[in-house]
Amino acid sequence: MPNLKDIRIRIGSVKTTRQVTSAMKMVSAAKFKKAHDHIIAIRPYVEKLSSILINLVSSTENDFISEYADIREPDKILVIAITSNRGLCGAFNSNVIKQIDSTLKSNYRAQLSNKMIDFIAIGKQGQKLLKSHGYNILLEYNDLYNNLTYNSVSSIAENILNKFVSKNYDRVLVFYNEFVNAAVQNVTENKLLPIEIKTTNETSNTEYIFEPEKKALLNSIIPKALKTQLYKWLLESVAAEHGARMTSMHKATDNATELLGDLQLMYNKARQTAITNEILEIVSGANALNS
Image (tube, rainbow, N blue to C red; front, side, top):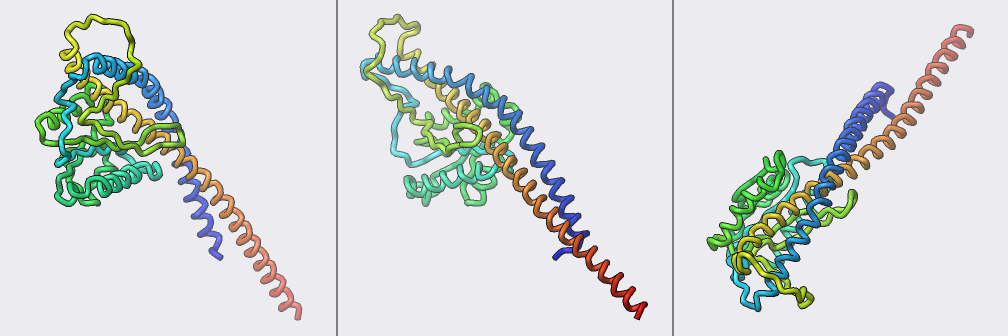
């Protein structure tokens, strides 16, 4: 059994760790509330923009043509990995990289073996993991989280759209953690480009007058919709990150509390044993003097 000094040192260390994890939990809870509000605010806008886009495409009488919808054989692929800059959030970041590995090895084995897959890393943790797996990182945007706004994401998305239109890449995939609730995050794979608009027969029968005409309107809306979609996915990832860290720190705090109870019990037993030994030594010494 460890001596009393060692146990006291461990108790102090665990108490300090518990204070840190408890503080991180509260910080993440505050940030989570703000990130959650951003998600709630943008979702109706994205849904309405998608609805307008579907209605426009449905009314173009099957002659919809866009440079962003150019379906080509996926010889060169660009993968966008959205992770966090900081750790201590469980398997939040590693799950994204595992999903990337699984998807590429299952669906794009030829491109992977021919090194025809490049990566854009958003988040330091993902960048480290991608490098450790030997992937080629074309660009990194780790500072994006310092000023995550539509305008900052728009400039990044514009660069990605230009690379697709210029045929530098034939397909653009995005991997991120979709926010479900504070305790649940789903690793999600989405295809950003080429864009696929699923039309429906349940469109409105109302006749509209478009200004400018439909095709010009589509060419204006599609890039905006793609940029907004990427911005939404980043907001989803941020909210999911804070939820994951809040849950992880809550578990760590509970574990520290449980460990403290075990250490306190061990300390009491060791102290009782030490006192008992001291009493025995005193009694033995007194008996020796009297004999």
